[in-house]
Length: 462
Image (cartoon, rainbow, N blue to C red):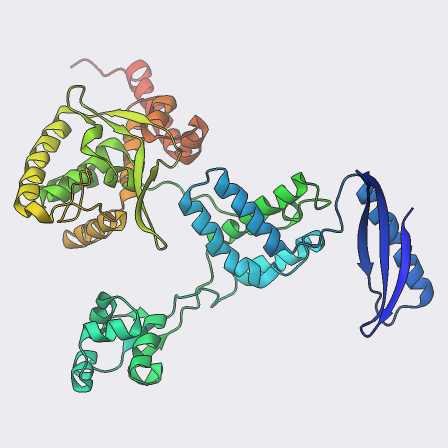
């Protein structure tokens, strides 16, 4: 039976509800809940609501729910993220979780875990979809010749970068009259004790967050509340009753054969390092980080194959680092003779670079490295491909597009989903069939026409 005690103090009148839940050793286990009525409620209304809350509270305790949980959503989310980290979640995932928590904490972080409702979440999702919600998306363009301004003030690009705590390249970009982030523009203006709008024209980005990003927030909140539900800290997972925006499925984009041939021809004019890296993206279907993270020790020259078990990634908090593949799986990919010949030619060039740099060279063991042998940032490959596509007026050449292209080529040539899934490194075949369902449909239609042409539409004899 719940015990109810009236409490009067400076903050007004409230009621403390106590429920006994047996003993733990020699100690009596009690759960507490505080109820503060609205000032305009009558005594009869207070008693009725108090009785309802006490019965609900006692019932929850009997069912095993700790409904007097005093943790806020923010506090509990930190606990859940720590659990994920200890369980081996990838560093990049944890970094993303903590980044998402900044907005989540600002919106619902201070709400008690047990009091979080679908309405709170729906209001948050609606706010995320409003214009101007993006952080760091605003840009600034110099109003004057910033190069001449620096010279007049007696500053170099390096001294400005040091004083503003930003990268020298950012200052260089600004002196070229190009866009930089508003945050960087603020830092530069502060060095000269000027208002930002004196030196820069500010462009506001009113584009709302994408549906995909909003769904990311929803999934993290759902993960946290699912753990709370599992630990019986809440009566239900509020996220399952919320209404996030519907995520439209985007079809995987791939290059047509004619485009692949043009890319291949244009690559012949490019340095062997980038030509080899791009070639591997297309032939293997590997992810960008897997290609950049490939080591010479993983190349099996005897059996014409490579072992994919690691990837290079980048995170702002620790720079370039090595991790397992996205699905933590290991796979061996057979390579055609042409690819092996290209790799041998590239290895010869690589060895020449190593000898040329002598003491400056750091032997990291990776195929694709910086000019001193250090591991390469995966973004470098993406940046080079963007410049490459612009140089030759090619369609957008993005690393992942090669992966989709390889899958489409295999499907159109009758290779089964299991084999394609193994080559791509998907943990489940269902992942492959889900991503490439539209390609499978096109391949099936092509197969149907092929059968009809052979069986039902025999060519007339000349």
